[in-house]
Image 1: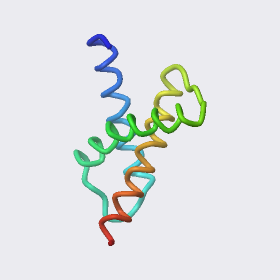
Image 2: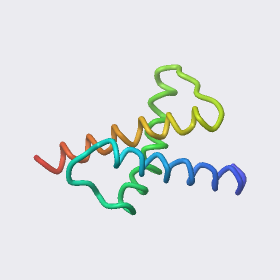
Image 3: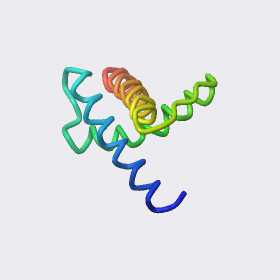
Image 4: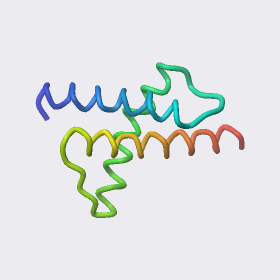
Length: 83
């Protein structure tokens, strides 16, 4: 992965985390926390989509993949926090 790809990956993760924080209402993690969750969610979304055999290409596909991963991660973190 070259530097440009890494920067795009981080930017997409940051945007996806912010969007997921807006969609998943309730006690959030704050702007910075949601962005970090977005970057981690981008990894999670890519891994899950790969397991299911779904290929999402381009900027919009990458954003959707990261968004789904971030929403799932926020949901899991909230479930763990309640336990």
